[in-house]
Length: 424
Ligand code: PGA
Ligand code: ZN
Image (cartoon, rainbow, N blue to C red; front, side, top):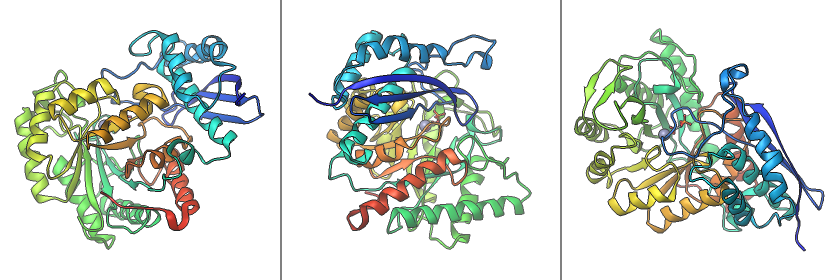
């Protein structure tokens, strides 16, 4: 018999940037209810699954999602109602076939993912399991190291920093709870340092500070100062991770690069790699995401060849959580890790496939939020379920980010003595 999907309803809500996004409610035949909300990116990869927007300039400057909501209510619901809620992959497959396009442009990845996430959550609730355990099994007990994005630049902030994210990584902490404290304290100390230098302490989209520092390098030096001043040892207690999001300052998806925000001028892939080599030898950097742009596969490969044995090299825009691109990356040695974002591919089961492919290849995978988020904490459970050991979900400010951290605190407490926390 099983428990079946009885009612599915979508609605338009707002994300953390005040832009519309999709929320989906599901009711099961056993009376269980669940809800899930879809995030939205800003520095998106060209090959991401399509986020369907209305394009009606009279509403939210064209960003409304009423079409996606209608697709949930009128197209997806009639097709999947009656299906067994525990058959996640089958339900996802049904939606993919119903959409019929490679990038989910027909129904919208926002419509499809909303249903997919709500199905997973409803199944977990019906089974009486926490979501992380339903998705990850009874072995899911590793709580991820929170790579906290404390300084924002690029397309996430209006400042002079080209690199999008500077993250503090509490890899020396004994537990998630302590790790979160290490980096939250560092965040507060950083605020004081910025203030002292007469720099702005307003925050960017992911809650990190967005000061007009002189250069990308000054940003990293200030962070190291903050780590020390907070009482921690750089590289031992807290290391650094970066997301250049290089597509956003490349001229056409590849080299040359125009470091426009800082006024540092034009650089080729090779210059950026040489700079990274210098930084990695000088600073406690353990992870570097999108050091090159999404079409610069050669540059990426070169970067990985030169730095891949020292740090985790993560592909975001280049792989877009899509097994087609991750497989190519594994084949060519493009990186040694993939970013994992549910809405880049558009279903829970395809996201799990992407994780599996990384794991099978001996790659790491880095679970991630989007710069536009909601109060939904799905990501926290998902990260524990996927057992990847680290995640990024923003800074120690903005409730849509904190909600995920708080959920991880709960999970760690729930796991008690069985909880694991380690970097590698
Ligand atoms: P996005 O940023 O959500 O705006 O794409 C996150 C990232 O680039 O990792
Ligand atoms: Zn990124």
